[in-house]
Length: 302
Image 1 (cartoon, rainbow, N blue to C red):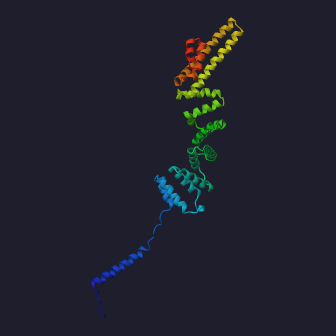
Image 2: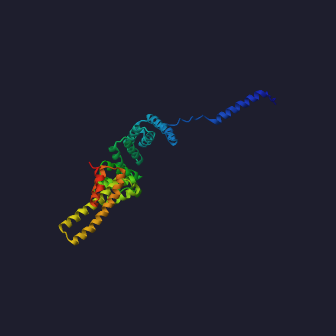
Image 3: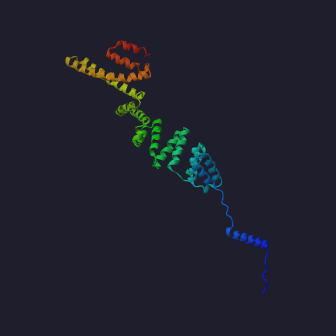
């Protein structure tokens, strides 16, 4: 029977440490190093943080690392939105063009493009972009129709403007800026009855609106003047007691029209006293037989 060999404690400690190292190494396995985030991931993170400048730079880096064939149109459109928000409009248009080249399109893209062209005062491109947007995408059309309505009026395409008006919602139609545009269009189209009612609606919101005041002042002046001339002509052709009584009744109505005209003309005079409105006062007070006021306003007529 062989004798047991007794190892010194120091040697035992070294052996145990070596065995522990081997066991740990075998359990941990090889380390996996994560790749750095892609330019696209960095761009999306910057976008989520609201840092649009950083997002644009990250998209630029991402596109430089890819071939054109590898980049989907949606990425160009997303990058273009960031460029638009950061104020780099040329880059935004370029990337939107790349998205369209890749057959990508959505409502948001065309809305942004229209805003860019508007800021560049390129009304023809803005119009074509909005028309495409309206004909191909149904979401949030009211804002698009409002702007189309304004452009058609500006370009004197009144029939297009009236067609677009019918597509606008009631809230938009009741906005004072749109009401005034609609009023101006109907004046051009000589839609008298529409203008009669619209002018009063406008004056409820803007009591000193010159266009609406002029419309009503002119309307009641000519109602009174035409009635006055017509009835005087009838009486001069047939000077009978019966016709004279008719004349007096009609002249009362003409006087009422003249007084209504004055109520609008006086507001216009307060806004802009002078020659522009003086002739109305002269003619009305001449019908009233008030020579002193006729002479007062005559001073303003050159």
